[in-house]
Image (cartoon, rainbow, N blue to C red; front, side):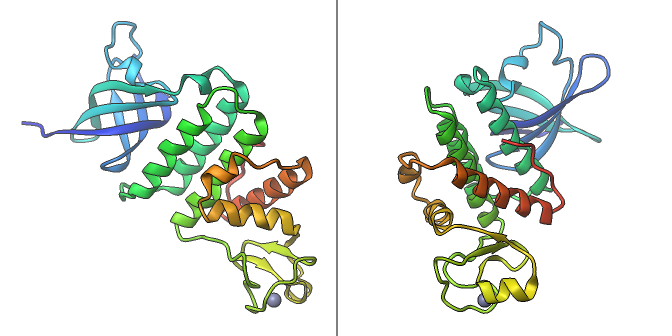
Length: 244
Ligand SMILES: [Zn+2]
């Protein structure tokens, strides 16, 4: 007798396996990250296919076998179809799924991460949001995700010497844990100049002011700064981000 398990899930990655099988990496609401084998799922006749597409929220069922968990059911709950129609959105969504897949190693359950993932994909799926908003949604996910994993950057005091920050001379240093002052920057000789406006955006993001984020008008140079910082940050974890 096999025990059947059920949960809502989102596919992070799929890899073709022999014959018509696929091995799915799924982030689930109730069990965290799982690997589940979809037997015969690449056959046109497979009833599991539509629930296991990329950028979908589905109700999945599986059993625990000797080697693999095997998919027994996949019912589509919501398809994020506007993501699928837009190359920029696909690119951003893929980055989000890849970052989540890289950082989350085992089956530890974190409901906050599940909620953040679902909310992020729903926002990205909103029709007619421009590329700037899409990038803000990405940064919102990125910093709040790291923060849930325990890497929330210090944005109010120098992360090294704890002194109050002076707004005209700010530097970001992920290894030190956030913004550092000029004195510490000169001593450490590592970090990146960050404007006070970019710090303000990070503060809004980390204070979870989601509604404000989508109303912000952000200049392109601020985006470059935010992107450089997120890339620096991923590099400290030995992860390369594809350009967004
Ligand atoms: Zn300092």
